[in-house]
Length: 174
Image (cartoon, rainbow, N blue to C red; front, side, top):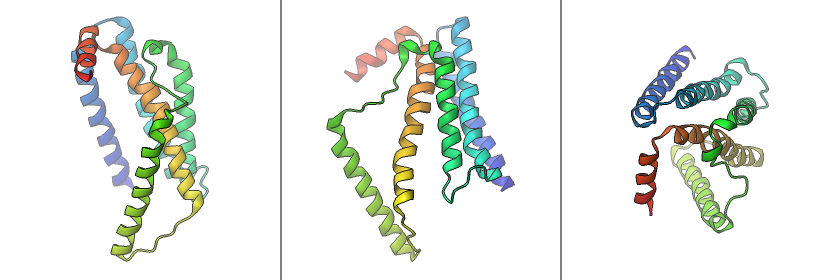
């Protein structure tokens, strides 16, 4: 358990160093952008801490890792509403998704479930399948990703970038 903890600390540290170094190189140098960088680091570390704390303390443990997901989602929502003025021009959080992508999402989900079932069968492992776990992982992971990564962290980083870099990136995507 201790190796997992230190491995996670190392992983988070390397992620932060790389992301912050690249952002510091490409960003417009201003007081508000340095504040955005500090908020980004705080929110990222808080997210990881909330994902880990429930696993170490068995807080809100219901047989599936509800506690860590709930803590991460709640902390993400709190940070989102506390710091939204820092990324209001770059808010990528969307509650309503495009309906034309629903078919692709459903197909990928079904293929993933079938793929994992085949892997478990080949390995000879029992497939303890429950509808509760399927619903849990198919809903909470996306909500967590949407709030924390797309809504909060991406908005903070995009708000820091130099406008010329943003403009050239948007031209390449066209």
